[in-house]
Length: 504
Image (cartoon, rainbow, N blue to C red; front, side):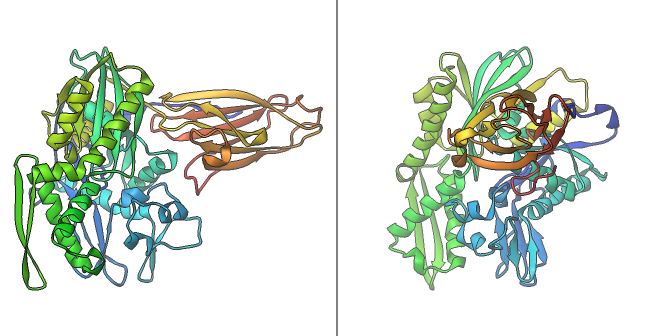
C-alpha cells in the first residue's frame, strides 16, 4: 500500500537572500506583500498603487491587451476567481456569475473554458496572468526574481478550486509554499499570538465572497475550529443594490441602458459605498443622453438598501458560532475585506455578539500582509503554528447510495483517516469507489469528486475480502486517496487534482 507522507515545506531550500512574497488573489482586487522582521507591507506597482484589479482584457482577436483594467470596446474578464473549481454546468446555473461570462463558455464539455474570438482559454490560465502580474510587480520593486509565494484562498474553496490556484501559480512560474485561508491570514496580521489566547471570529466581507472563521489561539498555536460563509456574496452585490436603488429613483429602466452606462453607474455606486463609510450623504452628477443625472443617496437610505444583505451575513456568522458552541468563549471579531468598513456592519456585530470589534488595520490589505507573514514564518524558525480545517465533509458512496463520511467538516488539517470496507457479494472481483464532498446523506446530492475501481480482488464469500481506504489531506487542503486489499496488497492511489481531471 502506498504510504502518504504529509511534509512541511522544505525551508532549507530557501536561501536567506531569496524574497518570498504573500499574495492575496481576490475576486475584485489582488495584492502582493512582503514581510521582514515580522513587519509586513504591501508592494506597490510602478504607479504607487497597492491594488491590482482582478481583470484581464482581451481584444477581438483573443489576445491579452491589459491586466488590471477594463479597456473600452474590448472583452474584460472580471471575477475569474468565482469560476475556479466549477464545472460548465455549475457556472451556467450560478446566479453570482454574470451573463457576459456565461455567453463566453464553451458548452457541452466537461472542461471549463472560455471562447474569446477564435481562442480558448481556461479560468486557471486567466488567473495565472493576474498572479504573474503580481509577481512582475514584486520583481520590479525588488529588482530580483521572485520564485516562491504563499497564496491566500477563501475558506470555502474545495480541493478543485485550491488546486486550480496552485496550477495557476505554476503557469506563472511561481512555487506555492502554502495555501492559506484568507481569514486565517488576517489573524496573522492582527498579531493575535501576542498574549491573545482565546477564540476570535474573522468576519471577511470581500468583493466577491463572504467568509467566517473561528480561530482558537493558545500559546502561539492558531487553530481554525470552524468555517462558514457564502462564496457568492460580496461587496460587489452591495454595489448592484445601490445601482438598482438609484436607477429606480431616477426612473431608469436598466434593460434599456447601454453596457457602457451600466459600468459607469456601477463604478459610481462603488465610490458611493466607500464615501458613505465616513460621510452622511453622497452626491455626484453624471452624463446620460446629453443630460445631467444627479446621483444622491444618504447613509440612512444606503443602510435601508443593504440591510437584508448585512442581516444575511450576521445570520451566517451566528450559525457558525452556535454550531461550534463557543459563544461564551468569544473574545473579539476581526473585520476583513473592504465592505466590512461599513458602519452598519460594525454596529450590528457589536449589538448582536457584544464583543470587541477589531478594525484598526486596513481590512483591504490584512489578508495580503498575513500571507506575507506566513511566508516569512515558513522561511524562518518561527514558533507560530497555524492549523486550517476541512470546509466540507469528504466521504464515499456506499450500499443504498448513502454517504459514508471519512473526514467530517471542520476537521483540522493535515489529517489522514483510514476505514475498512468489505465485499457485499460472493466471489466479488472488484469494488467501485465514488468519492463525494458535502453534508447530504444521499451521495447523489453531494458533489462528485472522483470514481475509480479496485480490481483483481481474491475470490471469497461476501464480507470475507477486506479493503482499507485512506483519505489524507495535506497542509494545502488537497485530497489524496489510497485503497488496499489486505491479503494480496493490491492497491490504487489517486490525487484529487480536479473534480473534472482526476489522475490515478
